[in-house]
Every structure is written in structure tokens, then in C-alpha cells.
Image (cartoon, rainbow, N blue to C red; front, side, top):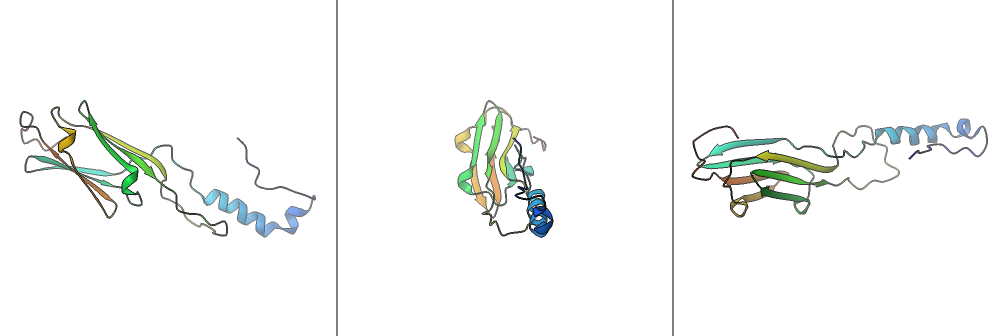
Length: 142
């Protein structure tokens, strides 16, 4: 799909309206493209026989986050929606990713999805995952 940023009615329209065309072109390049899939930063630690996972998800609504556990794999996925845009806005810097995100981590067998506790506050998703007794060996790595 091709986009035309400039539509000329007369040969010298570009020269007559160059400030407006520069703004349109600059605004186009200042808008970050939606990432197909981005990956949030996470920390996983072990505490009191449980894994505690914290994922940075600023700007993501709680209802846009899904957490599943299946066959030893924990999946965190969802979508960060783009802020409302105003056509009169001129963006100088846009570095945040928008669109779908997904993170998949392998955990030991025996974890029960129903026992995973979820908490989402201030853009941080925290999951508390009980370590199955048969797999608990005090290992610090996941």
C-alpha cells in the first residue's frame, strides 16, 4: 500500500504552501509505527516457595492483559493502545511501542493455573506462582 503525502492541484502549490507540507511530512515520520509484537521487560525471583514475576506494562489497561499457563509455559499477552491523536498535534519524539505484546516463559511442570495470583497496579503486572512441591529444590533460576 502506498501513501501520497502531497497532492498538488497546480504545479507551484508545493512552493506556495511549503510550511504546511513540511508539517505533514514531519508529522508522518514522527509517528512510530505500531510494532507487530513487542516484549515487556520482566523480573522473576523466588521467595518463600513461590516464583514472583513482575512485568513492566505502563499504559496498558488491565482488561487488555491475558495470562495463561499451559504445558509448562506461562504466556503474558495483550495490547497497548495508542493515545488519542489530534490532527493539530505536532509530535517531536515518539519512542513508546504500541500494539500487541507477548512474553512466554517456561516454568516447571505441576504449576496449576488456578493457583497463579495476579495483581496489576501502576503499570506493573505481578504474578505469584506457587512452586510445585515435587519441583521445589531452591533453585534461583527459572
